[in-house]
Amino acid sequence: MVSVDDVRGYPAAEPATDLNELIERLEEVITRGSRVPLTNRVMVEEAEALVLIEQLRRSLPRELIQARRVLQERQKIILEAQMEAQKILSTAQERAQYIMSEQGIVNEAKARCEEMLRQAKDQAKRAKGEVDLYALELLSRVEEALQESLSRIQHVKDQVTR
Image (cartoon, rainbow, N blue to C red; front, side, top):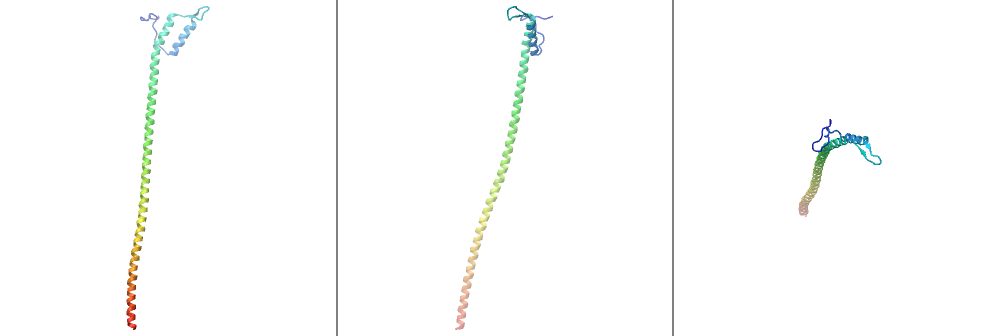
């Protein structure tokens, strides 16, 4: 026996099932209905149609809640995926910066070494030049001293032979 909805005044709906099933049952009620001659109208059992409509009303919010839940879950999954992607991107950027800074340190050290080597070569050249000048100066002094000594020897020799 069908119970009557106190508010609406027609039979109360049974616990709702799947929306598609309810729509199919409503379609069945309409298809089974009696055709009104010379019109496109169909007469159906009012109580049966109203029960199905009420079940549809009650099922609809449940379906909407379920759809919302699915959308929220989808949003949650998308957000988690975006966060994970951001995390991966951030890690990759940090790694790239580390590699770049490491390479930068290596390049900087190499440049400093090359500069130090250049300075050492320049300093060695200057030192060699200074040593050469000093040696030349000493040799010039020795030459002068020898010239002077030779000159004295010649003078003494000249005095002895006279």
